[in-house]
Amino acid sequence: MIEGVVEFMYRRDDDTKFLEVTYQNGDKELLYFRDFSSGAMIENIVRRAKTFAIKRFLDTGERGIRSDDLLAAVTATSSKSTKICQTPPTPTIGPRCPARRASASFMCAR
Image (cartoon, rainbow, N blue to C red; front, side):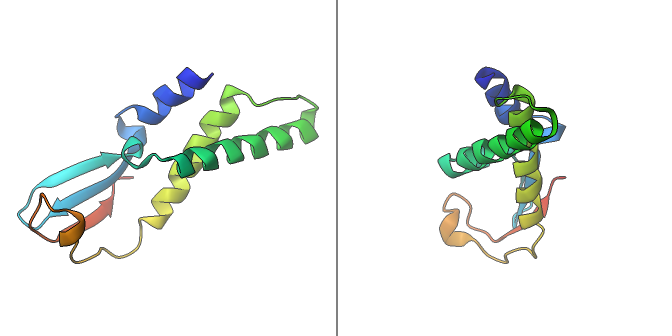
């Protein structure tokens, strides 16, 4: 179960595109869901999966967390994070991106 969810979270495909960064010099970088994973994100995924499992238990009486609960939680977490990135672009990020001496604009990849 864990291997399937980790494989889903860390793959690079159209379903996991998250953010496209365009630097002032014209370079573009596509970032994926996996580039933003953290302990806090994994905690949120587990918490959502537990919520899905509880709702399923109340509806059907089936106990336990399933792979489907975890995959749905990953999808829900990435969708919620995508909504966060729909804010207007930050004009400069120089100090946060020392390898790129430029300002950058951000655009959701979804």
